[in-house]
Length: 319
Image 1 (cartoon, one colour):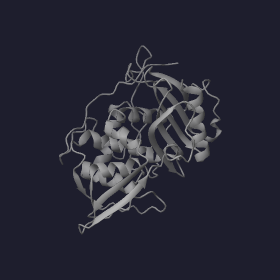
Image 2 (cartoon, one colour):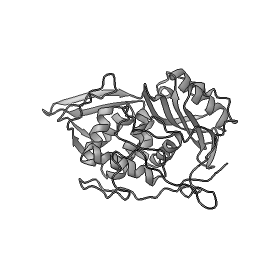
Image 3 (cartoon, rainbow, N blue to C red):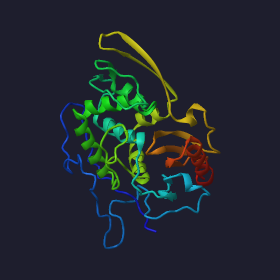
Image 4 (cartoon, rainbow, N blue to C red):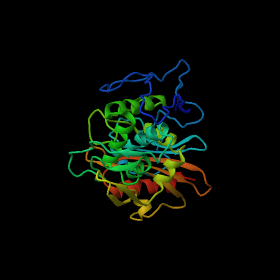
């Protein structure tokens, strides 16, 4: 087993203004076949260091999980930098709305004032049956409110509004996402949109999602948002008239739709679901001793499988 930890090249994209940050890896738009050689003469992974967990092999003897209805599942002990469970961690998979973790990370690293007002542009999404806040052109919301809508309620139009604000256009924002992913050591990731709606060139892996989520957890605002069960968004429409909308978390542990597992404390996480991605979730939990863990499950057949698997991983792997 190759073990170690990923070294993030911390070239943060800073500033809240309209200027575009330089992209040290160049534009990745349309490039779905990039790769990074992770082998060295010593057989180690140079992108991995002691701060992060890493493994190149499956580790499945730590939990009796039925993987027949899953595409990937992982458990990471953050404080001990240990991979506790790993099943197909590096397979390229569709992430659905787990994409929004990177969207939020880009915004949090590029905005100095979350109370800044954003005038919503054209965020019309034509796909049927997708999660929407219901934004209309000319609506005025703060960056913080758009982030809550993106992370709590998984609103695709809110993610799109943030991308337009911080990338000037969606294409450039996606370049920023792909660049940041490479800086974090995500070698199995390629984004084409900020929300995760299906596209064959939009993919990541369970391990890459761990890298992104672990980085996002360093932001207090992110942690506060993924812990939120209900949130009221008070904003104004294009005519300046006050509007109000209540949103609810898509995390069924937080809402009580599924019983929280065992002795762990559920901090929060992000869900995602499309027909091609299946049911997905990344979750931050603390053990009874207070040690932080990150759990990733992708491609579950339904919510019972998703939450049942996460609960089993918590009960058997989080000590």
